[in-house]
Length: 142
Image (cartoon, rainbow, N blue to C red; front, side):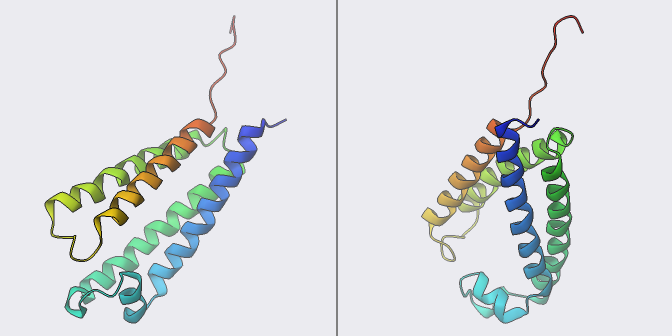
């Protein structure tokens, strides 16, 4: 019988799988006007063909992540490595926007509080996943 934490983890991973699948499809199939809208209407010169091409490839990686999260949601105890990789990836995604904020001139495109807020939400999600991840039970005498 699964513990309640495993059920909660399955739900969280299922929601992440669904959101990443939708995001991956959006990245793959979105035309330039949708990309302009997603990026909060930057200057048109900032959205190049190379950026659109790279976004479509990134959509493929997001789709791959979605499939891995779906498999992990089916049996979290057997797929702890995927959950750990997601936790580490979220921690990396906490640091990189803040690094961009201080090394690039990104404040003209996005307000600083949005970047900080995204990082805080990602850190909270990583902490939640770390709390919910299955732990090994060490049995005495084994």
